[in-house]
Image (cartoon, rainbow, N blue to C red; front, side):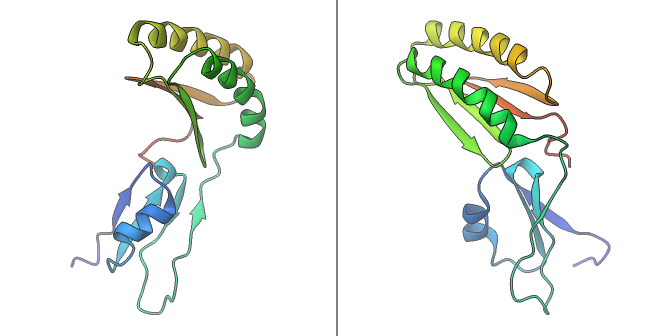
Length: 142
């Protein structure tokens, strides 16, 4: 226990799941939504966790209003795909689609989202089987 160090666990999962798994550990800070929301380590005087949110400079509700109709179109034409919303990300999973079709649709989706969301400060993360829209300022290093 070095008082000069503070340890945080940073997760892409929900606050509820992270608290359930790790919330009982004393002097552990928690960060969820890939660092967008965080809770400093609790002290002996704290009766409950205090959560803070970084200002990511994006009207996320406006991003969702623009992005969700586009994502719905691609979900409707790609069997096995689905949309996953988190506090500060919008994901389109095509992991369970036909690999060639899913990959082709993902590349078209990114092009269309880039055009539709060009006025927002967002970036696109493409991983195996998923396309994710996140605020540009959001990264696990927050």
